[in-house]
Image 1 (cartoon, rainbow, N blue to C red):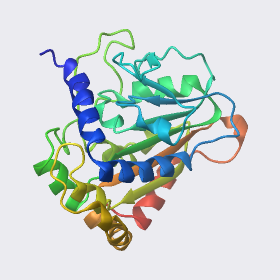
Image 2 (image 1 turned 90 degrees about the vertical axis):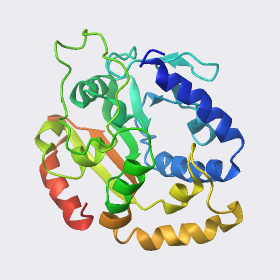
Image 3 (image 1 turned 45 degrees about the vertical axis):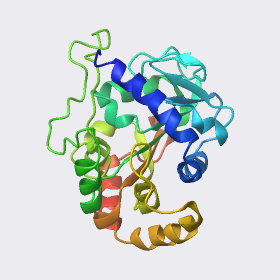
Length: 271
């Protein structure tokens, strides 16, 4: 099997698991509602999900345009994050759910996102979070690499027309980029709206798409209460990360100093 086909195979496997796990659907609905609460509805343009997988965001955001690298019956547009076919300034919100860590060249992708976003438009990322628990969960029980110390290549060598190298995954990338100061200077032009880490133990113990479910659906309220308690120590328990970036320009006024924002979030929610 070609490496690039691996993702599409996972999509179809996930669809079968999704259909037989009501608990998973209930947990994801909460994630989707959280994302929906950060959409800019006052900005004109399309709401677009990149890497829609099985297209479940529509259950909460019915007007979103579902896209992916592969054509499937529930996908409305085939799109490449590095070369989007949307016009300049035509998108109000870009949602990436478990997609950022598959972007081998995040700087090139973010530059393309800025091109298609209207002023004030947002990129909303939902990603694995690396804490003590997160490193255990994703390092020991997930097939994709964590790549905590692997070098991140910010821009695609040779420019945007260079052919894609194939399947890529580095689960720690969002934590490394958005929860420290190291990459803050590379995020000029973006205003940090939110950086939140969640324990999401209710999700981890559900088994996700591929693991065994460790508790009955009736105990979800109890597990949610446990999540809230563990959220108080994200550097220990966080397994999920929400990042909201807003397109900024000098004409907007104010500051886009992501370095200052990163320091603020590190103090409030250390990794």
